[in-house]
Length: 98
Image (cartoon, rainbow, N blue to C red; front, top):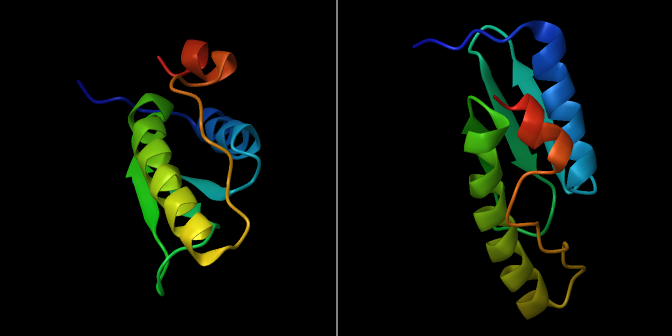
């Protein structure tokens, strides 16, 4: 089944995720590709890292894994480390994510 998400919902998902992670990620909705793209803003190797998912449910675990690794790198380099992300999506996204 193809999930078609309208522009307003996709943008809301992106803004809500970005706020939920304390702006450690830049999250955008790609309307033509029907996916969320999240760029990690914390300490990382040269070139950075991004993750993609079609829904918040798909994206959240990828972001958690990346942010956990980013914490490890930041602590090793003695730079500000991002907080740990919750195991589950924030409530608003859990209900809206479908």
